[in-house]
Picture (spheres, rainbow, N blue to C red):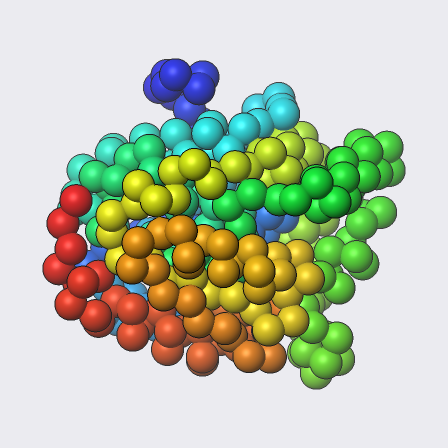
Length: 269
């Protein structure tokens, strides 16, 4: 464990595979690194793929909360520095995208490009109130009390009907998340606010929004794309909040196209 100005960092469990330009796949709240298994296996044919479990998730420690988004950023910065390799392209989904924005603002030397999928830089007051309610419900009744609602936001109704196996795996992962870790990260996500730093980002950025995403409506993705110089926005048709699982082929196409652009392939901090 190392120290940052935001407190002690948590040593993150991570899996690395493949060979080539380094990419990080960063998971959503209540998920873990295995939510990327299929995409990681395909990308590892051409790239080095690193997948961490964020604090409070998967096999990483779950210290007493609440957590801040700054703390999650410092955890991953420590992981990347310990790796001691070239700067990475960060592909972050939901909470993972928020962490990626923080890295791009606070530690730009660690990244050469950023994909922000189904993530926002800040929540409006109504959404923050909904997060407060979620935190209160989980604290009183456990994660199981919100599992149906989370699955409903993560996956479009039609997808859930056609792919019950994918939903079942995601539900098991959610329910297996340590309570302290889930609540801690809920606080971090609720309080995220990178708005003041977006204009300072100087690297290739792709913003991916889900057509049916209620958790991060298109307007919040547009806010990022408009504020970050040169950022591009793409809408993933047929997807709600976990587009990497709902529309895996199209999601991979978007990521690969971004990785192959000269800016993302050659950019240096």
